[in-house]
Image (cartoon, rainbow, N blue to C red; front, side, top):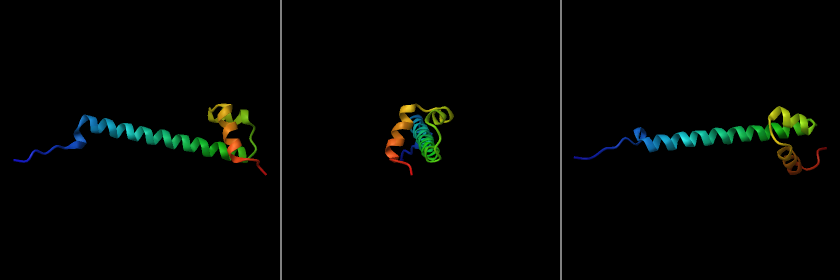
Length: 72
């Protein structure tokens, strides 16, 4: 008589699945924040405005600005 286990009902499986979903959501939010920061820098928004609108630190915006190099 074979023993069958439904892994999808297992507590640890569900916990891991939830953890993965949350990790994915955070990664998506970070990507969107990065893309919006780049767009705002390209549109010549001032750094303090970007920080206030996106709720990010000035160091974060400056780091991205350095990655982009000089804007033409």
